[in-house]
Image (cartoon, rainbow, N blue to C red):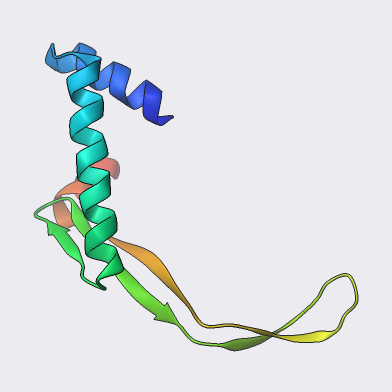
Length: 91
């Protein structure tokens, strides 16, 4: 589902405008981005926890040249499913 499809379905289900839905969603995503940039995590009860982890530098191989390379350390977003969501998706 794309962002546009999400906005359309949400607005239709909850009888709100697509414009207000888009504004709220954009604000939430902007705020989450700021929180993750600070290295914090966000936990939603019964849904899950979103957080930032640091991936260590590691070795790799260029598949075209088979040359050994160093893959630099990076940050990544993780998601740990909450019990409530896990129960719903496994019914």
